[in-house]
Length: 208
Image: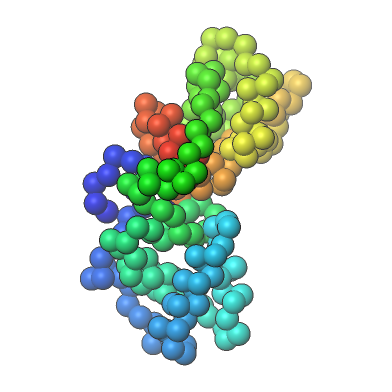
């Protein structure tokens, strides 16, 4: 997915061992082996995995509370290592810490896509005012929103139609997606970075 860090990609709180929840009395099996299984699954996963997904890898019944304890302990085990276990909007995943990305980029020196000011302004309005209609965005920006701008955000998987406003014409309501939050390393929209940091954060997310 806490110590002070200006990079919102790394703002998921890491609980100290003293803050971890107490181990449930009904904790099943060898917890060390269970954590190793979770570690293997999460390290090879291409997308964040939900608690429900992770429970499927075990033959025995495991409660959500037990799974959360295991994940919290596994996250604690990885503190100080080059990768970190993060809880995102759609689940859990490992991600390389931001300070190591420059070294990875030497092997794959691709330039992250640059977004125009119009695209970033539109995305910011949707993210911080959602749900909004295209007309709302135009009222805030003071200019017409090109269809291509919305299309870019939808193709990136960051914006989707979540309904229609009950007004003449029933304009579509736009909101950000879980993928948008996942790409930023966030669990919910309440963790969105300050507006002025959004561009830098998106570039870093693309680099990962």
